[in-house]
Image (cartoon, rainbow, N blue to C red; front, side, top):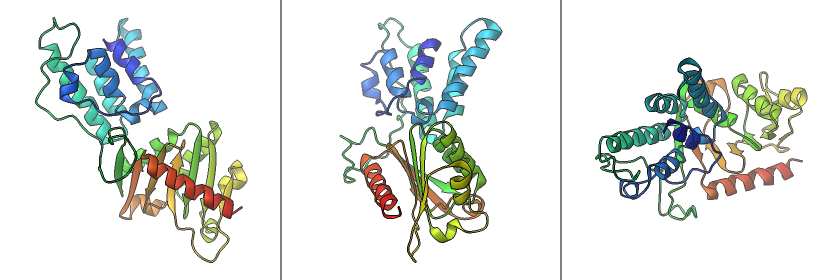
Length: 282
């Protein structure tokens, strides 16, 4: 069973909907594991999280010559989660499986007698026109600052970029964020940055440094008005957007917010705005 759970954690997949209690009663344990872990995008889409889970498995095998226990894998999975929703997914799955393990074992591998708890669900607004076929595979995750947990989640999200990272922000002065951008560029992610012309020249700005020292394509506005956006689009699948400037002041002092979402309408809109400005500032 532990090998099955590990295999369910590793694939690169899109996060589908969380399975309900009623659906779980009619599914095999293997299918339920697969569907539930796929509902935790910060695990299945994050390379560091996957590697940490593999590490738990390998360390236990080297030490005892056996696979890790189910409890060890659940604890490792929770520790690897980047967002509270995903931790809830893991706890929900653990609770349900524990209940089934103490129930009828002669059911042909089906989950039985689910506990009286409610599974986590992604944010869904039937009037948001997300074109998500019921809203079940869309997540909308707001995070707030100042908060080191929120900042770690932001870094982890940037570290998860695999193909493209389009950044459109008023200013970048936080070296930790600049380093995350450099790391993405060095691992082959196509990075592009749009920023404000005046802020790019500020003392401590990382924008020109990223362009000059790291050959990261960068463009700034050519008008008297501010380029005041603060968003990023990752792999054409995820949007980061909010009040948060990429500065230490926003990280440590200001009351700020960011929203992470894979809403197709949001991705399409912000990607379109990025491409429009990229062409305008050429």
